[in-house]
Image (cartoon, rainbow, N blue to C red; front, side):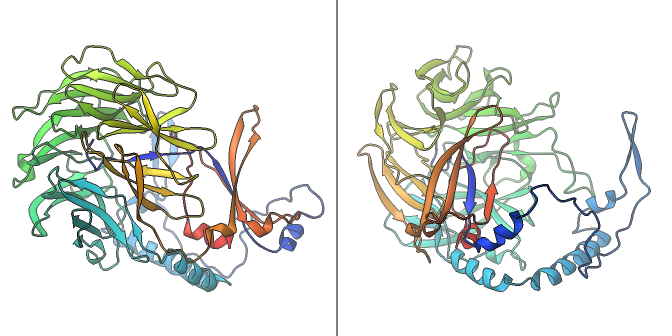
Length: 525
């Protein structure tokens, strides 16, 4: 796939953070009778007087059940409803008065700012001879976007979203360079909304073109192979007064040609008879094939269509029918499409489909094994495949015929992300972060199998002062749950208990992966 493509290769874990604090605090909390005390439901007299909230006399009938909803008016848009804006302002004023008086807050704030104040790069994306990446100096609200002409070229600022809004709430969302690096399509996100407005930048001049694509949400941007336009997903424009409250229904896939108004965009695919489906587009790195994935909500199972991008009308043909399995396109060679799928493989496997014969069944390339195949990409003439084990993530180099070449040298226990690339170009980049180390960026060559450090943050602490320990414990049904314990090494020799922050997550088939947190580091200290 194009250099814009990202992979995150996770390590399954529940996280327990052991923080340094006086043991007496724990002793006081755990001494005496072990029977839990009754919870007093009476609000404490803390001097806080909450603003009165107006109640509506609103009752709705849902399938014979009367549902009272007195605060429905608070769902109105804060930007357009003065009553909601006033209520939010009074609540924020109360919160600010309380938080500002908390003891120790200034000391924690100062330390957290110091822990955030280091330069941070995003994984570079290569397009043509240009390299695009984000770089945050440390305490900037939004991350500016830069470009280099060649790997050793001087970096040039392309977009600085910190200048877009006085309150800093306008963000640079998804961005995708055209295959030759001439244009950049990017999304503008205002006030944390999921809605995007897509704009186009001429990279040579730095000029923002007149192109403006609105009502985009939950979309990927996929350029055609010629860099003349891109595919995107959008919803119908909402009715007046409901700009940010409409439901996510009947998403449609469009094609936008550079230099034309959105009204002329071409509808590529929609399913009005199945309005709950979402549709995203991918274009193979050679620009030859368009793959349309259709899915429902967060469910990874999807239906696939394919079309040849030969300059003529886009004619989609069914590639995989029905929402029965997960399919993830990781590359192509000619008419051969490479997918990671769970079809007949609970732990995933690598297979091929033929774009010219969409009715044919998949052909196995790399068989399922005990470890889960979490993702992959085709870079140069080899695959990079990531496997998720019980205690670590491993990345392997695999030939096009499925034979393993070797391992990708990862710098330890952590999470690798990136590995975007193109068929025929062996260069790729990835980030690597751990529980006590912010992300560093590495450049990797799939031909030489050599990795080089590209960018590394300066740290205001020594990661060697902290221990990272992997343990497992049985859940109620006997399943072993992996857990990571973080703490200062000086605490490892202390037998007494210390306060603990315990964090876990489960949902949407998402694994909790090793990653750095500046705020967590402040508590560890």
